[in-house]
Structure formats: structure tokens, C-alpha cells
Amino acid sequence: MANDKVYIHEFIDIIGHNRAKYMHHMTANWVPVANRERNMLCYGVWGTVGSTGPWPQTVNMWELDGWHGLATNLEHELSHPSQQDPALAEWWAQAAHFRRGGIDRILVPAEWTRSIGELCADGVQGVGYAHELVTMPPGTSSDYLSALQDVGQPAVEAFGMQLVGAFAVAMCDDAECVVIWAFPDWQTWAGFEAAEHDDRLAAWRARQRTMDAAKRRMLMVDAPLSPLRIGRQPAESDRRPLDEI
Image 1 (tube, one colour):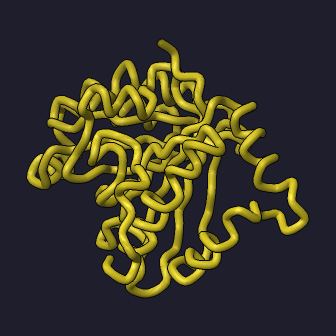
Image 2: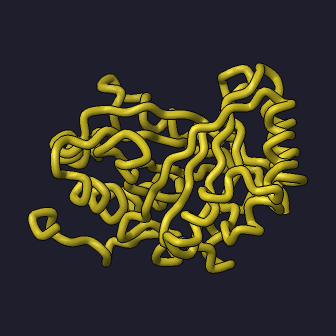
């Protein structure tokens, strides 16, 4: 079944040593409300591996029912004079102690990319994840995703990696993609990185070069209550006092 969802992708900058508290506040304290009031599912919350990218930082992704679902979510949030849902004032105030800001993107999935419900049902998870931000000439993001499906996915998965999701970034002239891979252990990831110039990846490297695509890969690990880790959406029963995190 084709994936007709739309996703919000966030890079969130964390203040000091508060990443664990922020991730719990985002998953256990926010997700049940988002599920109930906004029909908004958590696709994932991850902590970035600082040796491979910015730190301290998290990556959050949210799954909505297409563009109209996203519009409904924004209308819910922004129809108030404060441009903030009054029911979440306390949540926002607490979150402000843990984060300082971030950068968001809207993602449109390749039609063959699985939803978070399908990923959980299939038992997809990893010890870690490789997050790729890919840039290419304007108007070619769909070409990149097609090449990924035909050439890139079989080549990369031959090294034990597993494709989690592939997305075109909206509102940027079809010039950017996000691709997420899972790996079952750290040695599998190391083997993949060490094989960057292996002949088994030659066709995929060549295809990317002909498309003038450049990617920046960093690593992430699941938050304790990230759906791919626990196989479900976080629930109110998962909540703990933040001073115990």
C-alpha cells in the first residue's frame, strides 16, 4: 500500500545535559496528547551520535495524514493569538528548560516507504541508525529516490544495513532528500563504512555521481521510548517524573 503520509522532521538543539529529560518529555509527555488531539504519530525520537554530527542534539519525526492532516495540525496550533496551543502551555514551559531551538523540514515519503505502524508491525529496529541528508540539483529528488530503490537499497542492504525510510524534502525545489538506515550492531555499521570503496557499492556510487547528489551521513540512537525501540507509540503509562530521568 502506497504511503500517503506527510512527516515533520526536526533537528532540536539541547541545552546542556538535558537530552534524556527532553526525550522523555517529548515521548511520554507529548506523544499521547498528539495521538489523541491531533491524530499525529511519533515516527521516531533519536539522539545524535556526537562523533558524527552536531551535539547535543535530537532528531524528532512526526507522521501526519497527508497535507490536509498537516494543515489541520498547524491550524490547531496557530489559531490562537499566542501562536501556541494554550492546553500545552505548561508542556512548552517545561520543554524550554531542555531545548534552545532547532530546524524543521516537511518530508514527503517515497510511496514504497513504510509508515511507522508498518515498521513496528514488521519489527524493524536497530542498535543505531544512519541518517543521510542528501542534496541534488533542483527538480531531481524523485529521481534520487527511484535510484535508491533500484540500485542503492540492494547494494547497502548487502552489508547488513536495513532501509527504514526514504523521503523527499518539501518546499525546497525538489533538491533534498532524507534517508534513514538501521543497523543491528556497531560492527555491521563499521563494516559498511569500511567498504565505502568496495566494488559492491560501485554502481550506487556511480549513480549518485551522475545525479550530482551529495550526502552527509550521521549516526543516531533511539530514545528509550522511541517507537522503533518499543514497537508501539509511547503511552501515558510510560510517564515518569522528570527529576528521576
